[in-house]
Image (tube, rainbow, N blue to C red; front, side, top):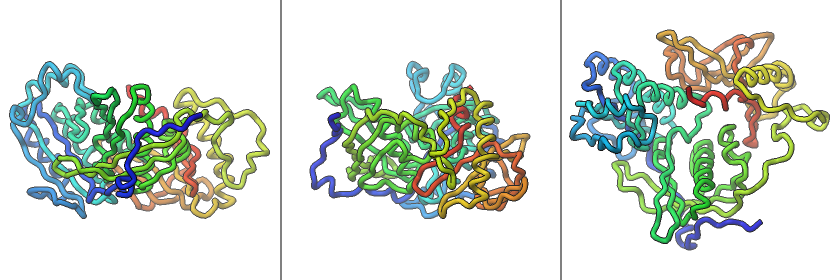
Length: 421
């Protein structure tokens, strides 16, 4: 197979590594229907009192900060009625009608250090989901240009609150055709994760889907590693998140990133030009890629791999069988240094909600599992990430074994949790 080089950059340009953003920042707006109830706005503000309110966002935030205000809908930039039905996101006819009659828009902006932004994102998205539900308004995700009805944004916020985070929830890839018939692909929204925005130039029409997959995978890798490297080898096992690994199947090569001029936006988001040399046609492995847990010799298991589950119920049954068998035996024998076992369990939250949170397992004795909360709760008010928790093994909804080499096993239910209604 001939290697594919997507973008050729001059050596002098390649020498300039991608610039990390000085902070992470994002904006959300809510189009009221037609005006937001004052009591709902007061409850919304109280839900964010832990985030200091400022007159303007700093040039480089070192702590969570917010700005907020109300703007007349007619002056804020109402989408043209003829285009509203085709807006990106999840907007139905009722949502388009809300936009048309809205008189006031709640306008907010948030910034934080890159290490603090994920809990802030989840807190803010949860607060906006509540405000939208209480007022019937439409939420605008300004960085991506997407619009959501109240019900759709609630699903979006719940997906963002799920750990581990799927970064594709928070950015979009825009295609802009050039005069020569090729296209430039650009991301919008990665600044919310403390990453530079990505661009790939001179993409042929028959490679648009491949390059979109490349950018989705590279964003997940950069987020999991905490930054975008100047050179990143990409294989199907590179991302830890199972959904990202599935997207990356067939990709093998090296992505190279270099700095270009920042965007002309309020935060002057850095932009990294991405070039890729490699292949998009690597065939998937002919045998199961799921590794045997530590301490178990995979060569002893000669049976054909089990068929992938077709439903959530089958996935849960498969997860439970392995959890109480192979995984428990491996954990009891002692995991290799650096390997971690996580379990997902339900916790009761306010207003009758149930929130599923990940726990980093410390001990597992008898039927009791003790560890520290790995998720940042969106709804459970009495817990925070890092808190000590104790559950019974019968409460485990799913599990995830994460190894030091970046591979994972488990999380079988994840493919069935974001399929929508």
